[in-house]
Length: 608
Ligand code: G6P
Image (tube, rainbow, N blue to C red):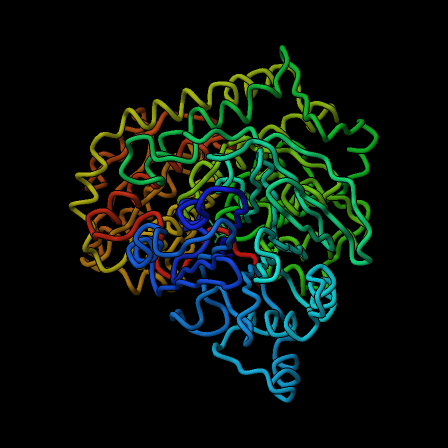
């Protein structure tokens, strides 16, 4: 979850590290630090809190001289956020400094062993064992010390190491945590995420698990656990700098909400040729598809809710059972999965620990997996049997928006593609649904344009004690994501309920202090949801209805209306979610919340 960065070259390292950390801050932001090698000594600076505090403390890096260094922005796992628990960690002899992203599972026994050998621990972190192991194993060759240290570690790690005896070198190691080496001219970099690299270089080497690298300004040597050189391909980073900047928006989240028409277009259009859908990497034959008896979609957070929304299109068009499972549950559920199951894994980052584990568990049981991922070269993209990239561009705000909509849209495309190949859809229905899919970018833009009143609604409702989102079927799936968006960035208590389920308990909580957001976009079930609106109104709740203009009956029932264009229910989530994202954003703004970096959350959850 943390962000790590490293630089070696002829420029001062600290300003470059701080700049990289600002780009990575969305990965963790409770404390931060840098270590820069200056001659034969390592200078360290750490703060509790944001990177801005570290910039202040180091006078924008000027107070930490040297041309080789490492940096870290932390999301605490072991030990509270504090200056001592912040990375980098130093060895007792001051020779090594380490930054680490991941979790060392056997750190307790290593800590006992190292303490018994006389090593002094300063922090409560799991990471600190690494730096003492390095000191213990060092006998003049840093590479060997890094390899021997890694051999003692269980868990996940992306490590960045500097050593005072090798002042122009960075050492890195990767096991189940992302690590990318940035290739420059007379200078080189590493980072946990390409966003920290794009300002400097577009050339990158993606390390694989079990690989190490020694990086100097002139050379990058990748090697394996036996110290043997590994030949690596240099890949081109296609994300541009602007995509990782706010471009005049107050928050990344608002920028990313507004980018959705473009992001969805990038997801959909290149895959439609004439009237044919081509799913690049996933070149199934009709025979392959016929073997599929069930589909399991697994993911975490909003990606899981994207699965809940996309499920309807697959189930209704293919008439194959679709189960949507939380990855953190599926991995331990002894799931009934075999080679007749298609597993679809959704992940914006491609690095979510539980999703990776669930994917591996399903593959172990014989299933083949299709990954729908945004980050190119990420772990999930590498492990899955097929990968479809969402091509949404970098998503920086912790709360996903375009990540979610593009995932949903790829599920729509998959459903239509498979239904067509299996002959389960007639031409008329296929063409009509394909037209809708093709017009989703425009429909999303229209939804953004037709809702200028949402900031006013947010001002009206931001102090309600709780918000309940209700809807049925496809609407219910969107409620799940709408409630999550609101709670994660505004900290209001928000819950999603199947509208028909309210009477079985939750209605006891409804009174005049609650807001009910009612989604009425599924035409077949609208009348039913409208009855539920009457029930909550009768108990004093305020009702904000989301529907399409043609639904005039609802106007007299709800207190406030939000409109979306009319879209066939199985394809409506990508449109319906838009006003809920805006509502969450503006409520959070009203409440003065740190929208892009909500408390306690991290963008990429790389620990279990
Ligand atoms: C975190 C993020 C969410 C995201 C979830 C899954 O909780 O804050 O926005 O939906 O992780 O992440 P993934 O990268 O696998 O989509």
